[in-house]
Image (cartoon, rainbow, N blue to C red; front, side, top):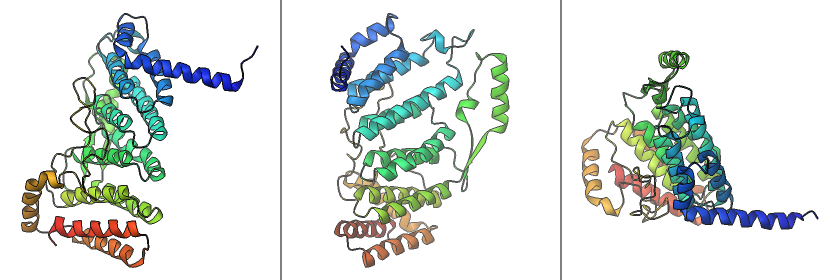
Length: 355
């Protein structure tokens, strides 16, 4: 007798729950993979299924990173290694893995608000598999624009965009742009077949990415403006705007950027660093605090303020536009929260720049 849709749904939920419990006992799952009983690729598919029901499960994300590390290790999976190449996983397959993981993270983030574990995993993928490749960073910045526009209260999504922008700025900066080559292309590939070597060599000569950082930050501020106007009263948007202007100011004045606490994924084993809270907004202790400018770093902030007061302001036009933006909101908006955030933002501009 055929089972009803309701019975099938209950059965699927039971299976997914059992999978999640299995990942909580992940030493057993690791043993299955190391013994060859379970394929790492199939394990990733099982993990993806478990995340549809338990999208925030830290054990599942931690185990997933371990499996991915197995995939990129020497001799870990012959089916992912080209014939005669036992030292590296082919570039196109790494890129495919990166894209698949981005899709998994995006789906999990949509199922659970402020899913810190999913976004932290996404950053880990960029760092460990994507090697902070500029093209991937730019693609991520583009692909997540719609997502954050649909989730304006989710700090984690904007926190991720801050990481992307900070990573792009962190590359070699010269004048108002950076000239970089695709990192994945530039990495030595001694074990690739000859024909693949030729393709890589040609790409290295032709594929250069020029990133207009001022324009990138300008577009991000414009995104903030559109979202703040469309969705008034969301502190997340004002926090993001403050962070973007902070980066813009440092870039315009060629000031060194302090280390910004953007993620807490331990690089040694891919586990979450327990020294940080499990939310992406743990550093926001007061309304509109920005990394490096909160109460816990008053000394650094004081030194930075003194340096800014001594240095000539090179972005006065940007500052004038920010004042004009906040003044317009204060003069026309009737949303109480929006007015409060605009007031806090304007006070921050005055305090931060010493104007």
